[in-house]
Length: 369
Ligand code: GH3
Ligand code: MG
Ligand code: MG
Image (cartoon, rainbow, N blue to C red):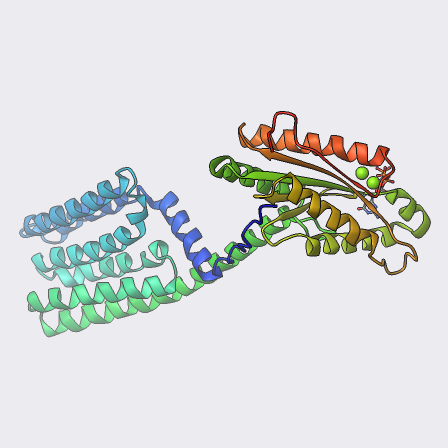
């Protein structure tokens, strides 16, 4: 038997998984929003011209430079394979937009008085591009770090300096608050989504993978086996005369027996094997990197374990029949899976016909294991 390595996949850190999902959502929603930033940045030229017709052109130059940088970063993230840059570049754009607005305000007479409200509004968009509140804190720090030298370079009046600082700090405080609220609701939505996906793949009675999940896992293993050239085996297990157990002891006792069977099967398999409930009292085990002889051994271990299990409240045991098949995967995973299940089912049928509580193994005729 070719022993498969006991690789148990480490569970992803929930925080990393959340950040990952939030990053993907940001990329899918915000890949093109840099155009809006560019348009808003430029359209404020009209405001500049309105409040200070004499100096608006100087502000316009500043705005053009900022806007071109914003567009350049946006076009860069649209290049093939560059979309993962988007969340970082969105923060860079925010800092550029803040600095540009401040630069434009400086060019106008009394510009700070008019421009500082716009600055605060730009800062308030931070929570919508940040992955989480830590990310937002970094963005806000970057904004402050960029603003301080710009403000000193522009040798503002004391009034403008204090007024702008107060507005910026207030905006950052509100942005932090919004960021926290958004993060909490994003985390809650993520947790619900994870739970929903888990439920959609889990059999409610036994807690095993349900039919859809074991089929998906099976196909993944077949794909892997086609690449590696290792054989894959499948066990189709069906409890013997289970209808009698329900008839004699009631459906609830039958349910408890199924739960116990699932646990016994799980214990009899290796960590690298996949187990699922295929239907009522049928279970499927996928055994990666396992040849026919190895699979027959595992099936026999499973059969023996069930035969020697005591079921509380039943006062009797039950047995299981197992159809086993092994395949060197040549065809594509979907038809390979169907073929594997069909062949195992034929062997299971023979196991039942030959008296139950037994294992019938065999490779698919087209396979050479
Ligand atoms: P065989 O040895 O030929 O497999 O006989 P069997 O009685 O096990 O097979 P059959 O297919 O005739 O009956 C399967 C029974 O499994 C019928 C159904 O009552 C029972 N069953 C299927 N799902 C559940 C379930 O979720 N809970 C309980 N308690 N019983 C179930
Ligand atoms: Mg059945
Ligand atoms: Mg049965």
